[in-house]
Image (cartoon, rainbow, N blue to C red; front, top):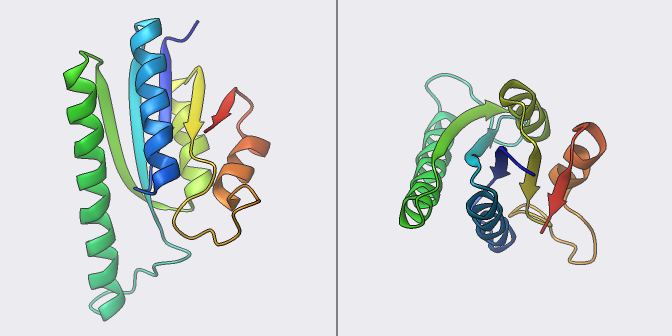
Amino acid sequence: MYDTVLVGTDGSASANRAVTHALDEAEQHDAALHAIFVVDTGRYAEPALSSSELVTDEIEDWGQNELQEVTERASDISVPVTTRCCHGTPHEEIVGYADAIDADAIVLGYQGHSHSKTDHFGSVADRVLRSAGRPVLIV
């Protein structure tokens, strides 16, 4: 059913459940897995040579570590994985990458680190769901 699965992660508990689900889907369907971490430039500005730049670098390093964990978990079950860490608006980057790789499905956590209301979808999940034009699994 799936040849290519895209999972978005921000390291939150919900995103980690999404990674687990995406790995299961990829393994079950013998599909390629892609994982993306987006440094939210709307939240973490990118002015040159400032303390904001240091925070942005720290977030990117953290994202690379999260993607490395996905790679290790995928390797344990022999699922091929491609990772991407980028800067931008999360929902736009996720949907754009899904389009670029022609993902059969996008898997996302219910809500990420920045969401404070437990009874609502996070804004990234909601925006991807509304704009993806392909199946989106919210875990």
